[in-house]
Length: 238
Ligand SMILES: C[S@@+](CC[C@H](N)C(=O)[O-])C[C@H]1O[C@@H](n2cnc3c(N)ncnc32)[C@H](O)[C@@H]1O
Image (cartoon, rainbow, N blue to C red; front, side, top):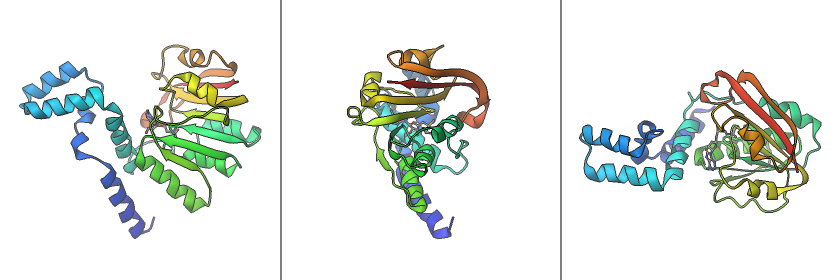
């Protein structure tokens, strides 16, 4: 990358990270009471404790978006920058249509599909991730519709998509929104690792669809330090 582009990227990245959310890395995953007790023991002011607890209890998406902004803004973040391997195995066998990339991250999969001739829509809560996706699309001369949005706020519409991709993501909204957004005959393609749902949770999510493929295998995770883990994969058709 050229020096000016590096500087612009750094400025953009820093502006998207909020120092007032720095505490989230230590608070995440803790029970709020336990975290409040820890803060009191460390001598943190009551007003600051109240501010943090309010954010944790009522504004979690803001904290999560900032966390992912930091992740995508750091050049040392360890994730697969190539298209997801399951998608890359499947996509060449499909006729291009209209796809939705759910929580698309930096667009590695959206851009791959666009290159194959798909019309691609996608969204992600991270401004930094969507910024990267848009910039790469411009560099590659590809068109994708990439929106900064949480899944809760995204307008999925009805019968719009031939393919809905969940790559290392899962629906946090009512799954009926996803199923309604698929065209009849459209497919859900999903991959994630152990810990996203309980045993066979992926199957149960799409029980209303025809499960065409479901597998669990040892493979390298695309995220979370790229370690060997159980990887779950599914194709389900409406
Ligand atoms: C593990 S990454 C996967 C990114 C992408 N699907 C890929 O495979 O490269 C998870 C992504 O989900 C996004 N995300 C998490 N919760 C979200 C939500 N509620 N709404 C929208 N995006 C969300 C994060 O910003 C992050 O980019």
